[in-house]
Image (cartoon, rainbow, N blue to C red; front, side, top):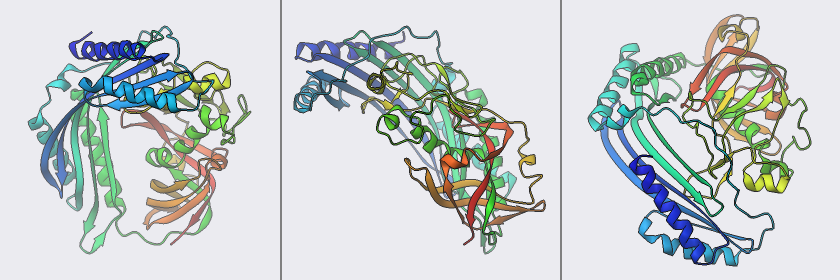
Length: 449
């Protein structure tokens, strides 16, 4: 164990001891530290840089079934925070299901840590920002970068509880992103963005170069946008649009909390088909390719690679220890969150299995379809109804592709999952945490402005 993890573990263990001594029946301490440095990009140039670091302690106590939680960012004030948590627990309505989980054997998994990331300094970040901007300018001078950043981050976390849970993890990564548009004379394209996050300095500049290519292609492709076509028909979503429109609503619907509250259409549907054949979704929580991979979740329980949906069939719901206790099942290791909040149900990483078609061929046999690269709107998490604007979109008719101004698309996420007619064989790992292909859907309502 390195010095930082030992420091955090000592704070967590001490917090548990004090909490028990002060009268708590059960105590959990989550202690996290982070260091971050950023080179800021504004108006197409490096604007400045900033650094930050912090340590946070989250304390959960249970007293006669009442739960209290307090957080503090100064470890010298832990006793004060414990008293706050105890007061909240004593004032809370007792919950028969409240309780901390008992420890389980953790998998033998340690995420790869690149020691050279910790040697990255502000000058390196500024140089990388310059590289990113140069890549964009060299590809097309019409692209204007409005804002962005290059960042380096290191984080560590330790969890301890009176039940004997003890877990520790560290993460390091570097990332970058830009936002802007293409400007050609009086013509201004749609605003767009791109970027990436990686866990290795050796991969960083190649990741930035690829992000620059995607960014420029989207911006330039949006120039001279015309009016779209109102229709109910085929829509192709790129990985970015899939992750914005489809996946958040789906993941909310398979949460154990949504199931318990009856706010999901999937109540009682384990083992049943809820999506088209060929659609498979998993959480590769202990896969070294993904940045959120770890041996344990926010409660210190084991993470595992979990098949959520296989060939359209729902395999499991997502549970933290509380929702699992309410449902009478075991936790799936899906407690997420930081030290400054109580654990909640969520996903670690995400992977949609690739399909059999190339990205280009998804539109190849279609007379008319809408290609969406970015979506902005709202979706009802209970009903699945959605409506929003395709911020980056192209109409493809008889093989011709033309940009269109912000057309509206609407429908129902849960119904669309049963109208998948194609999935690309290429996938993109986005932000280091999700691997998503492009997907084609049928009978989507498109309204031209």
